[in-house]
Image (tube, rainbow, N blue to C red; front, side):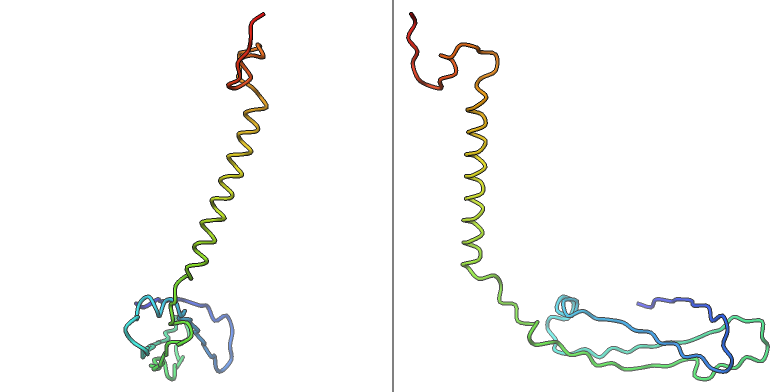
Length: 131
């Protein structure tokens, strides 16, 4: 896929050097080219100038460069998550859930039931004797 871009060259006397850089992330390499160990990338570039100068001459207006890209073997190894990390995460989640339930239980217990002023109704299961 080609991406054209324009850049103004405001003033230069005899020569100008244009440099284009790009990056191919290792994760992109692993996603797109999982079955291969290297890729040869062919980069083509051409320069055109729109100007009112009549005798403007472009030398080497087009070029082609071949770039070899190799997979980083250290990043290619996908071992996954160890079982003990998953177990630890599940236990930590259960502990946080239990603490949250205990805190909410204490808050509910401290406020009592709304609309009842009788202490017998707020005792949560204990029997009250009428006098």
